[in-house]
Length: 288
Image (cartoon, rainbow, N blue to C red; front, side, top):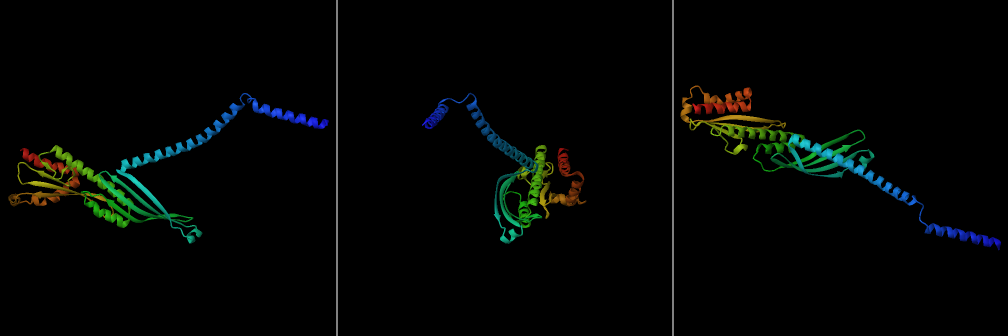
């Protein structure tokens, strides 16, 4: 009986202790500690995510900066790009540790005033020792331009599936076009009465006339050619328009040999100095 009473009192004491624990507030600092611990764990998780996000933003910013630099350097800007990948690895290739992947790329962009669209397929074959890749198909679409020289060049680049040649040659072609435009514009502004551009500053021909000699005109034909290897070269020719009477009076054949003399002068003086010398020669005669 005594033992049962002792056990009952022990249970009552335990129940009382449990009730007190539920009713009484936690000890000072205990609850604050739990809250700080929770905030610390949340902050640590957020900090790790923030650092990862910050690294990604930094890397993305670096890539954008490099892309902007290349765009400024080459004049080529990529506006849209997409890529699809197809795994062509067979079971037999997997057993030999060979991976075969076909990538389909589409992009569009511009190089100054010329816009283009590209579609090409890149086949990658990788084994334990090496990785090889080859362009298996290339399609180039150019917006209509006044530059007829580009049509043949684009067909050649597609046939050879040579992306590097396309971008390199396009860059230098546009650079030469811009230089020709600036040169013609400068001479037109400097000698407005003598210089005539039938198609404006973008013209490939520049006429030089002498006010004192009606019917006499020198025509500079400035073409920009792209050879078989994609090298861009300027080609300037001189055409003469003179009255029949002047040809009959030219006993020394100066007019006939003028185109050859012009090319010789180009090799000695360069493009701008040669053109200015022709303009000045007619301009000076008109002033006299």
